[in-house]
Structure formats: C-alpha cells, structure tokens
Image (cartoon, rainbow, N blue to C red; front, side, top):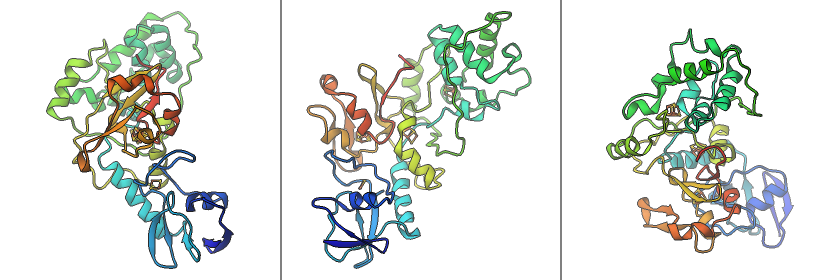
Amino acid sequence: MQITINNKSIEVQNGETIIETARRMGYSIPSLCYAKDAQHKSSCMVCAVKNDANGQIIPSCTTLPTEGMQIDTESDEIKQIRALSLELLLSDHRADCEAPCHLVCPVSLDIELMLSYYDKKEFEKAHAVIAAAFSLPEIACDTCKAPCEKACRRGRIDKAVAIRTIIKEIAEMFIGKTTNDFGIKVEKTDKNAFQSRLSSFTTEEKKRLEETVVVPSLCLHCACTGRKGCMLRQYATEAGIKRSRYEASSKLPIMTKQHVNGNIYFEQAKCIRCGLCVYNTKNGFTFKDRGFGMEVVLPEESRENIGKEVVELCPTGAIYLNNMYI
Ligand code: SF4
Ligand code: SF4
Ligand code: SF4
Ligand code: FES
C-alpha cells in the first residue's frame, strides 16, 4: 500500500504505524506515550499528524496507514497542535527541572549537589564542587548578594537554606589545603531550557516538608533528578514553551520521591500518566482512580517487581536512577 508523507510517496510495511513509517523515512515526530516494541495506548497526542486527504488530526503512534492517506508531519499547524498538547501536559506538572538556587547563581555553582555532599558529611566532595565554580574558594561569595537564598524554595516554607554560610564553612575547612577533584563533573546548565518551576506550596505540603526534610542544610533537593533523560522537557524546549498558559490548578503531590528498589526511584509529581510503566510491568505500576483525579501509583508490595528497563521506558523524570541522594 502506498501513502504520502510530506508529499513523498512511500510503500507501507506490514503492521507498521504512521510514526514508524515516517521515522523510517527520516522524519522526526515527538512521542511520549509510545515506545517501540512496548505496549502502549495513545494518550498524549504529541505525536499528532494531519491527514490532508480528509483534514483529520490523528495520533501517529497508533494509527495504521490506509490507502490514499496524505500525511503532514511538518506544517506549522501540526507543530502548534503538538505544542498545545505539551502545554496541557505541563499544566499539572509540578516541580522544578533545575533547582532555582542553581539557576540564579552568577557563577552557576551547583548548589544542590554541593549541599547533598554537605548533608552526607562528604566535605571534600562539597569543596570540590565549590572549587569547580570559584578559582579561589576561600573568597567565594564575598561580593555576591546571594540571589540563591532569595530564590530558595525552602524559604517559602520556613527559612531559606543558609547557602552562603555553608559555602564559607566548607571553604574554611580547606584553607591552605588542596582538594582532589574526586572526578566530580559540574555540567553547564542550559538556562533557556524549559523549567516547570513551581511557585507555591499548599499548607499540607509545607507542613509535610517542614516535618520530613530535616537534613542538616534543610535543603529540599528541588531539581528533578531524572531531568537528563526527560523527553517532555526536551520537546517543550524545542517547541519554545517556557511555562504552560494553563498552569495553576494542580493538586498533585510534590517531593514524593519513593524508593522503588536498588537505585530506582519514582516521583509521582513528574508523571504524565502515559501508562507505559503500567502496561509494561507485571504486578507493578497501576492506575488509581479515573478522570482528572487519575494517578499512577506503585503499591509497596509491587516494588520488587520493577526493573531498570522501566526507567528507560518512562518519558519523563518520574522513574529514574538516583546515584546521588539517599
Ligand atoms: S531548597 Fe536546596 S535545592 Fe531548593 S532552592 Fe533551596 S538550596 Fe536550592
Ligand atoms: S520530569 Fe522533565 S519536565 Fe518535569 S521537572 Fe523533571 S525534567 Fe522538568
Ligand atoms: S511513571 Fe509511568 S505513567 Fe508516569 S510518565 Fe513514567 S512511564 Fe508514564
Ligand atoms: S505518542 Fe502518540 S499519543 Fe502519545
């Protein structure tokens, strides 16, 4: 059977969907709730394409080609439809991609990473992170007005993390000594990439965070640990989305980093309910409730059934490998 994709004729292979045909031709179509060779159901619509033969907008990940289709994957119209789907997904997607303290630091110090070592009393490593941003750690922050402390999310609960004081404390421990770099790589952050920045906490969240986050620094470790492999963020950045127009009404829980097993973690607030983890694990993730209140949950007794392959399947930072924090 022949169809056209972006005005080019192509012979369709047996059983392949439109996204597979288009990708075989070299066209790039975003997808979130679809993964090749995995069980999936259309839900996100970021893979939308238009059939110019009848004007229909269809999900390319589940639609099988039919004779005479004239598929458009590249027009501005279809890109806008995909951007709208992304914005709707992001409208109840809570939590930061990057920690706000890190984003506003003039020397891009990875404050959260430094604090995670500080909280584990690994001071040499904490010093190595500081030394990666300041050539003279002993005078670090001396002339800075500490925008990091103003941006600190902990400040919206009780009081901001005393970032500058902690940096000074660590720097003083190593005056006159050299710190090996411990192979710590501090990567440059793309400040233009999409930020799902959260602006407020509910009263219950404040209470819970105040009670549960009691590490020495008081840091909430705001950044999304799974951000490196996050396709949602990548597509939102490519589509030029800064923040969703539809933001605000979310009731999703935040800071719910659930240990799964090994170094696999699950953070429900980052889940877009695509279902890939549900359809592709046996006695593992499951849907709870229906409609707007639907959630993906992992019952305690199912944690041991989860393997690393689910981390690869999850298109967001909801299921991730965590080597940094306890
Ligand atoms: S709580 Fe920690 S990670 Fe979050 S903004 Fe404050 S210092 Fe940064
Ligand atoms: S899951 Fe992706 S979009 Fe969401 S906070 Fe993490 S990196 Fe950002
Ligand atoms: S946790 Fe599951 S349902 Fe949620 S985004 Fe990841 S794969 Fe999809
Ligand atoms: S990837 Fe096709 S509907 Fe989500």
